[in-house]
Each structure stands twice: as structure tokens, then as C-alpha cells.
Amino acid sequence: MLTLVIPSLRFAAQPGQMAFDPSADLDLPGLTALLGRGEQCVSAPASTEQWLRQAFNAQDVSAAALTLALDLPDAEAGHWLRADPVHLRADRDRALLFDASVLNLRMDEAQALVDALNGLYRADGYSFVAATPSRWYLRLPMAMDGQTTPLAEALGRDIRPCMPRGENAMAWHRLLNEIQMLLYTQPVNDVREQAGQLSANSVWLWGEGQPLRALAKPAAQLYAEDALARGLAQAAGIAHGDLPDGLQHLPPPDSLLLLDSLVAPLNRGDIHAWRAALQVLEQGFLLPLWQAWRQGKVDDVCLVLPGEDRTVQITLHAGQRWKFWRKPRPLKQL
Image (cartoon, rainbow, N blue to C red; front, side, top):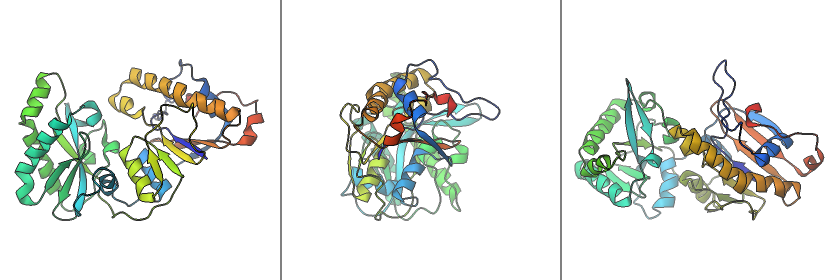
């Protein structure tokens, strides 16, 4: 089965409203043909991370451990969290969170900010590490005694209901407030703001869980840019690599591809960029996939569309090639 996971393709319908479909006037012959010809199955709402974790049977495994093994395989053992740089934007009586995709931090900027954090917290047993400009880690002196919200689930939202929870929640809230005050004073952020760039004015703590263990293998190989997806593949012992530019050359049939280029534009609320990214997906992946399936170059295809209201799965098998009466289906009909 060739499986394509495409988050942020569907827009969840609001109560009493039709589903929003900004793709309505786009020419998407590959996507609409796949949606029309395939069999639809609807399941419970799921984020991309939740769907991947279920596929790998890794619901309780630490996200920080998964990506740390990928980013820093020789890292010192201990209790690790992700501590990713974010931008908090005041919006009336709330603070909205935006991830590193809007920051475009350079590695030297990331390292300067991490050095400042370590200068303040090293004596307390905390150690910050910038594995990449956008993926930072925090090594704790002891295991975290609370629950956090995955970064992807907090994006674009008021941070208050997403803050760390548990018996010592207030201590974690104080730590985050201290970090924000420290980052506010950093020359790196001053220079960025003077240049019209957003500041990295906080970090987002997340990714606690159980240690790494053997995982299920939902495919023979995975292609993705997402670090968590690749960390899951590595922990499961399956091959993983970068996404190809398109499907003009098909990967092996038992492959899983995470096509997440629609996520960042949607999180920014940039519908024009979302539409442009969808057209790139259509030309590079969806239209070639439809053509390859129709020509018999691949028999079994599955599109997985995670969503906040439900998860939609579209499956095509060889026997459906002759169901020519099934017409193309627009997104808004899912």
C-alpha cells in the first residue's frame, strides 16, 4: 500500500456552517479524481502526530526522545524535553503561539539564545541544546512531573489552556515566564526586531513520555521532512529519507509519505500560500499518482487526511479502475 498522509488539506466545518473550501476554484484533476474513485472511511479526529503514533503503536513514547535520537544520537542520557523557540503575540487578553517556521532563525542566533538560557539555568541542573535552529531541547535534573501540549496542537492558539498541567504546573509556568523575560532582553532579538523580523521571545516545552522501545512497522520505508515522523521510523527500524520532489518516479509500493507542506501556511492563516502549496502538491504528487494508478503502475493507494473534526481515509485498489462512473469529487464534499 502506497500511503500519503496530507494534513491541513481539509478544513473542519464550524457548527451550523458548510465546510470551508479555499480550493474550490483551483484546477485539481489528480486530487478530485482520487477522491472520487476511492472508497471513503471516516474515523475519529486526530492530529498528524496522533495518527502517526497510532500507526507506529507509539502512543506513550516521548516525542523528545524520538527526535533527540535522530538529531543528537550521542546525547547524554537523562530526562529530556523539547524546548522549541516560538514567538508569542499579544492579542487582546490572550497570547497566540507561532512556531519557528515564522522565525527563520539562523543557527548562530539560536546558539546565542541557548547560551543565554544556559548562563541562567545551568547551576540549577538545566541544560538547553539547539540541535537545529528550530529544534531545541532541555535536559532536566529529574523527570517532568506534569503534562504538556504538543507544539503542533498549540499553534495559532491562546497558550493558556495549553500550558503545562499537573501538580507542579505553577512552577513550570514560573519557569516559562522567567525564560520569556530573559529572551526579551537578548541582543539577538533586538537586532531581529530592528530588521523587521519576529523575535524568539519564548520556548515551548513539550514531548515528555516513556523511553524508546520497539515500535510497529506500518510501512517498509517512510519519506518525510518532519523530525517526529522520521524519529518514529528510526525507532521502528524502517528506512526513512527526505521527500522526493514528486511522484514522477514512484517509491516502492509499501511506502508512507508525509506531505505536510500545507501545515505552515494554514497555521499562519495565509490562504494564498496554502493554495499555492496545494497546486505544487497537485502537480508533483497527486496528479502523477492518479495517472500511475490508472495506468496500473501502482495498485493500492491510501490518502489519509487527519482533521480536528474527523479523519478521512480514501483507499483505491486495482479493481476500482473500472468504476468509471465515479466522478471527480471536490474537497468540500468530504
